Length: 186
Image (cartoon, rainbow, N blue to C red; front, side):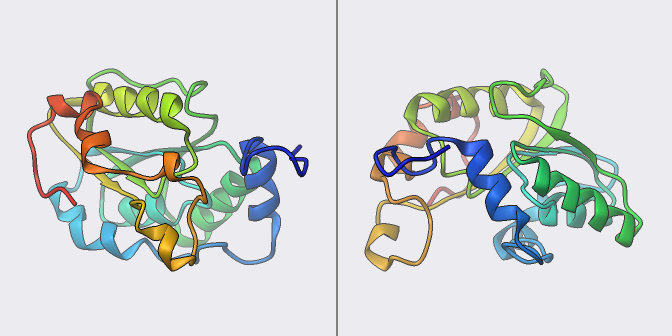
C-alpha cells in the first residue's frame, strides 16, 4: 500500500484495483482513439495481445473487429469489469490477471501487440516489457505503442508524474524495439 513517502504507483496492483473499483469505467468503455485509427494494420482472424488493458475497452473493441484477442492487467477489479463488458457485448477475449513479469508471454505467435499508455513502468520494468512484447510477435507482426513523452508534464492533465516513466524516441529505439522495422515513430 502506498504511503506518503512511497513513489507514485509503487504498489501497482493496489493502486489500479482502487482506481478501477470506482463506478463506471475509468477511461470510458470506448476504445482509445489512436488505437481505433491504427488498428487496420491487423486483419480479422489475427491474434493480438493487449498489454495492461485495464477494464478491457481496447481488447473488446479489437475482438469486435474480428481479431482473436488476449489481454492482461494487474488489477482484478479492472479484469472483472472487462469480463462483464465482454458478456454485455457478446464478444470473447482471453483475459488474465497478471503483472508484466508474471504474465505467461507467448513466443513469436502474435500478429500484433497493443500497448496503449503503459506508462507506469520504471525503466528496468519497461525494458523487460518491451523485450517481451517484441518476443511475442511472429515475423511480420505489428506493435502499436502509444504513450506520453516528457512534454506531458507541462500539461498536467494525466499520466505519470515521473519523467523516467515517459517515452522518448531514444529510449524506445534504445530498447529491444530496435529489432522491429520502423513505422511512424513519434
